[in-house]
Length: 359
Image: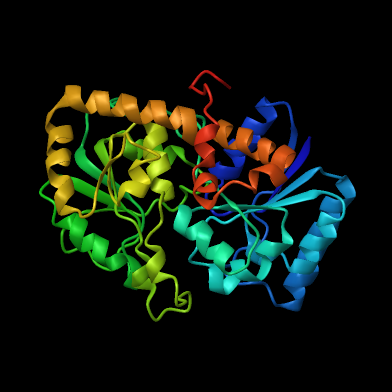
């Protein structure tokens, strides 16, 4: 199959690792890299002309499958134009936060809709009359994120990758900062009263080794998700958003996992039932006993790391997603007949034998 990975979110390792996995499976795969940045549907005439040029270049090369990573950059007309000669797919990396500003306008133009969300997110789309989609959580591989846990003497107990600034993210700075451990946050912060800011890894979107260097110095990766209720009053907000909860798997979790770190996350059973090796609690305070055990018991930490790596290599690598993608291309109509809950967990059907020596 001839496949084009079109555009990208800032985390290039997603498309790059998927390209490697699809090529490993024997497919011919091109990747455009970043084409046009933004979070809302393109409207400027110069942007529309530019994207039409890119779309026609794709059509002329005659691909079998087109996968868009930035849906805001393609109008319905552009997708329909491509769909007349190839199968089209869309991956919704910020699902469902960008629904009002972007996703709802274009998802029905695609053959295959790949969500980032649990059953309730998929059901929300279906109740709104959209095409039936599939949960397709974040992924990566060991080329982008090698196993680095326990490679160096740790400098910190806890690490948090991600921003802690603004209305949506500020609260988690206060929660994380109050934990009684040696800790660092790598991302944007409004202020740093706890003195825990490790810096902003500006080039990490391009150079994942910068992230690996940080993770190699920590004992456990912590994740506090963005809760959608915090978007209240912002331009992204819509009536159903708060009730959809939080991001099931922020990208940081998959980066921790590939790197081999034990993971402690705020969430609920919807996260743990598909990644049981993650220690999940409903509040940051409830994570403290587990964090203490990992930080102070090396043997326990090593066992937790092994479970994290094993589950990543089976179900959260780029190879697992590549297997699912090809299956969707070949069996789309049949797989769309599955229940919403089955389609939210379908990715677990694609267990692979991926490890650091696979490719």
